[in-house]
Image (cartoon, rainbow, N blue to C red):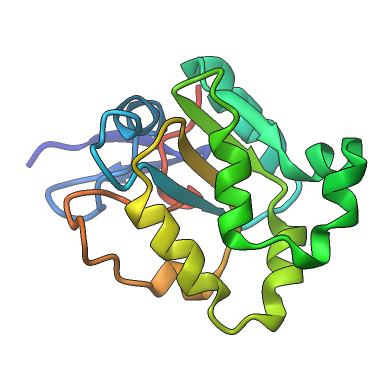
Length: 174
């Protein structure tokens, strides 16, 4: 039995045959995401809000992807800020599709929109559907606070792709 060390979310774990599931290499995921014919969006669920933006910035620097923080984007744009309560899931994806400076976009700061969508019982399903059917560039990685509904959702259209990643199950960006 071969053993070794795996750096996972800044913790080192030792593994033997089958005792630890394979960690997600985020740099490879960023590279592969824009090459998908469909399903060009995914979510990284974080367990600590603080540090999420710095982690996404580091990932964007290591991969050449563009990082956009929605909270900053809305704060800097009066028209967007005035329409938060009526801003839809489709509106979000349409807005992000206009950010074409890079083949991959890493998005943080979505929590305030999720809160605005809380009155819509289908918002998570709409969001998941848009992720799964996204075929335009840029490909999108949402980095957001852990959401149990998204975490347990089964994506059935393209089972070969990863749509939801728990940040605890990623290789550290070292």
